[in-house]
Image (tube, rainbow, N blue to C red; front, side, top):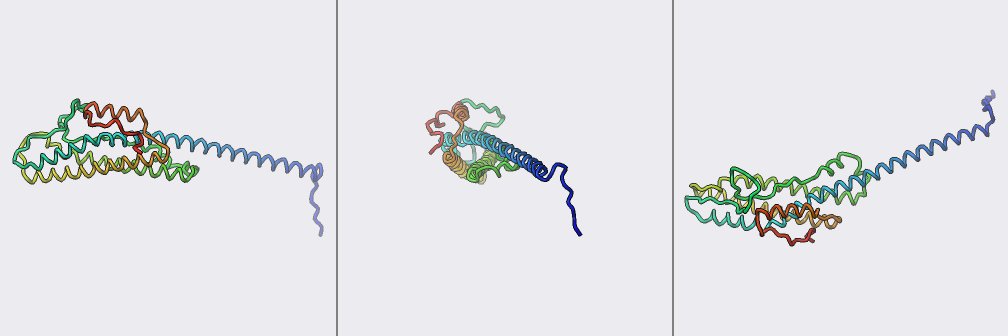
Length: 245
């Protein structure tokens, strides 16, 4: 039995040529689509990298601020420690020494540290998208390390702010028992440990950022330092290098 293939209307040579043109067109279309996708991800990577660097510059300014105000915080903790160790059944009241307190509160501050809004939105957005799959893996590791350190700073800051709030009644004079002195002394000791942790974490963040080619936003640093000096006074340092390196 013999099978006869139908012949193209214009011959096999013309048919093969038409198929080749179609295949070439498909390949060109696929290549163009791939180029568009590559350019899309290249743009997405650049934009995401820029946003994460911008967020970190704000976070680094807060880390710098913490290093700058530490000479104000440690003496205050030492002062509270000594006052609580003095003994006696009457507490004279102890308040932070602020020349021009910008925070208007019904309860004077006993011990205050900054409560800054560390920024991580760009990193969290990137984690919930596919863009990091198109980054240089080494760059992703850099950002992961830095934002992990930002998260640690934010967590310690929250614990510190909550702990300091428990000392609020020490701003006012009144009777105090030895047990209350010891309890408040434990709080001050915890605040001392948290201050040391905050300072260490801030300096680690600044150092690792420098290795990644990032430094604090100078304008953010200047605004933070000016605000702190306006009410804490000259104990706030202004001579620290931006990268603390």
